Image (cartoon, rainbow, N blue to C red; front, side, top):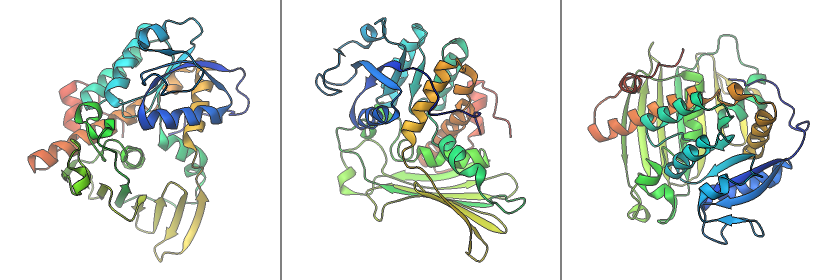
Amino acid sequence: MSVGPYNERGTPGILRVAVVGSGERLEAVLAAVRGTGQIEVVGQAGMPAGGGLPGLPWFDDPRALLAAPEVQAILLAGSTRRDAEHAQLAAERNLPLWRLPPAGRSFAEAAEAAARVRKVAAVRRVASWWEHVFEHVWRELAFPPDFRPLLSELRLSVRGPVQQSWRASLAEAGGGVLATDGYGLLEALVALRGLPESVVAAAGRLRATSAARETEDTVVAVLRYTGGGHAVLRMGWDLPPGERTLIHHGAAASVTLTDDVVTVADAEGLTIDARPLPSEWLPSELVRFVHFVRGDARDQAAAPLERHLAVSALLDALYLSARTGHPESPHKFYATAGWPEPRP
């Protein structure tokens, strides 16, 4: 889904932000901030003293930081649980907010966050890797006429977190490899195919190094779509060789999406189109946020929320199926929460 044109180099002024976070996410976001040239960090909280940017004010209480008059917006870069708590504080002060997905540890939490967005006048943005893919590559690809995926393969294997990481904590993350490292590919899957009718999943801990983690390090699943299409998921921490790949197979062509390139091939495997994907998606995403704040583009900023909710429903269905051993439907979480289902 496109959120409209924007000029990354033409956004006037510097946006002064507070950063609240810790750990690996904080490091990634601070590096991305430096890459934008359009954001100035004026205060930080959430990390141990000395754990953020040197030479900048550090607050042991995020509420004091958000009350500082020079703060124009807030960037969240912590665990899923803590980001939800700090998002509420930002809402109380009507501050523009940017955060990484997921929007909650469950569909119920994500729906609660989406309901807050409707009530707050300020720009609220949950980052979207899929929009980065779409804007830079996807909408320009040379697809065969009437391309429609019938079988999708999602394969992910990355280095798992250390025991002290929030990704290893069920209370902080809500899930392991599926809900954290796998989120971007799941968003891309939902963006193109929507929600499946049902899922069957299994999740567990495979490696000895994962014994101290509370969250799963391996997930396998089969997704069934209305009309007969399917998707197969295989995700894992610490399972070589490393990869991050999503493939959509149609009747006449296949499209492969990785961190580096998107390739379209015909049924014989011959390349029809191949385009490199810029790997630095976080700086691009943050520049987009600055544009939304400067333009007071609240609705554009919130555009991915419906898709993020759909991913949350899919995550809940996958985890529930892994616990029950039975097929589960992501659609029922909308009914339980009283939230309208996404449009086809």
